[in-house]
Image (cartoon, rainbow, N blue to C red; front, side, top):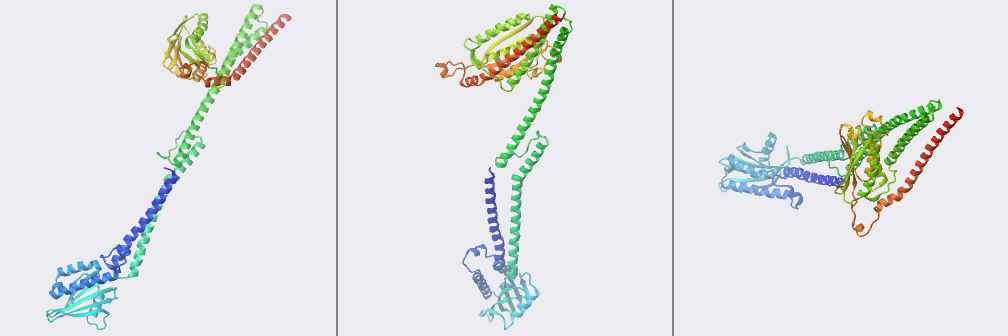
Length: 566
């Protein structure tokens, strides 16, 4: 949910809460004020009606009074009993009115609370007062030589009451029935009402403020605090600790936290890759230095031997010069291999992809491989299980480099008197699988996963066999650039099998109908783009050949000068 939507919902919630607080305040406090003033028979409807509650109360009291008079006329002793007085009090209580019954000056019943002595004195004073503030006074003949006297007056002390008094004589005893309607202190009720409403509003505002503060902290402050702490950790170099910003956050803050987490993850991966790359570079420099030091030391030794006259015969001089030339070629091959790997790693190798027949291409390659193995006293077994029309799109030169590197490794690490190389090619659905096996010394399980890493050698003994350690790493880069995969299996003492795959060419409809171009449009574009780079590389190789020939000319001139001096 977006933050703007959350804010809208919060505003709506606040408005609803405010309206509810007003309604609840009106319902609770208004009811308290109305029932306290006019009795339980009156409710909130008085606020929304045009009726006068005072007239309504007077009518209800008049009706109740007439009912009392009617009962007294029929039975003057009716309200002198507890049950009948209770029934009258229950009926009058809804009008905020309570009953008191007095006989011969003694109160035999009272539901007035509190029924203080001062209120009793006020009622006693009003019984025989000629100056009573009577609202209405009347005498009614009961028909048994006893008159019923009815009075209605106000009492202001000790509290505000409206009193309806019914008096008569029963068997020579004076009976007074008081109906006291309490109006209380209006200002006190008003103050209490305002105070209650104020307290209710304060509680509601505190509740709303707490809810809003919690939402703001939970939705905004807490994620920002976590981002700040994460930024501080990242600034101190800790890029591995994940940012915990909660689940299912799909708003703007969630998107910000997610982007920050993605940035942290990318920085962590980049830093680790950079450290790994720097470590590999240090190892590369160390290995290259070691591999260059051996042929350089050999060349220096043979040159000194020539200069010091150790090679005192033409046969020795020729052998020394051949050794120098061999070591120079070894150095040149090492440097070229390093340069090639660097170009491949930087995607600077110009690939020229062509659609080639698997059968024709590998048949040609096997002729060269067979010749090489024959010179090394090794045999070759070659089987191609692909149909004649199976094709792949490859760079022939680079793919040949892959095959040569694998074969060279197999030759280098063969420890048997008669080496054996088995090459099998399979049609594997959408790809062509090439398997090259040898019967060499094999690779231990601990080293096997790393043989395609640059500069990796399975053990120290292999270092004495020369080479840069980049051969299989170059194979892996080239195969991956062809969209394939390369892996190895091995068993110590038995041999090693290296397998790589190539994507098989599957013609589309247009090509079936007559399009016979040698490569796809994208690959043709790569050819044009990389032609210049390959020309530059060819010029560099020619330059290196010239430098090598120049070195040989210098050695020959030194030889001739020594012969002349002798």
